[in-house]
Image (tube, rainbow, N blue to C red):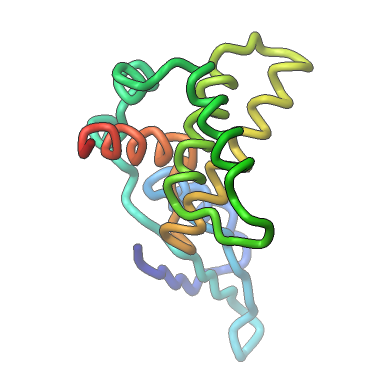
Length: 154
């Protein structure tokens, strides 16, 4: 990840921002006037777009995964056995995010599917923030990558 700073004419800010977000995976663009007030300073964090080979497809990531029913059972047992107010650990959050991703992938697009997708996205964002705060990537693709690696390490 790296930081980009651009000083430009205010009329060019949208064109430059669009070009940068097309070329890189970027965070929010911060805009400030220059000291003389005639130009604009743009600041944004960026990273190279991951190549498709860096992210496994859902089929690849979950090929050797236990069934969804089994993962629901594992999650429920884990929570039932955990004492109140204890840290649950990365394995729990990874398996939960992967489970929610798999459920969202089964849902049809629409009102009900949107809720499953939003829930899967939220769990993925949480895991990504836990592992790599400030990272810029597709959170659900990150979950798939980490889940596939965890299965391969078993």
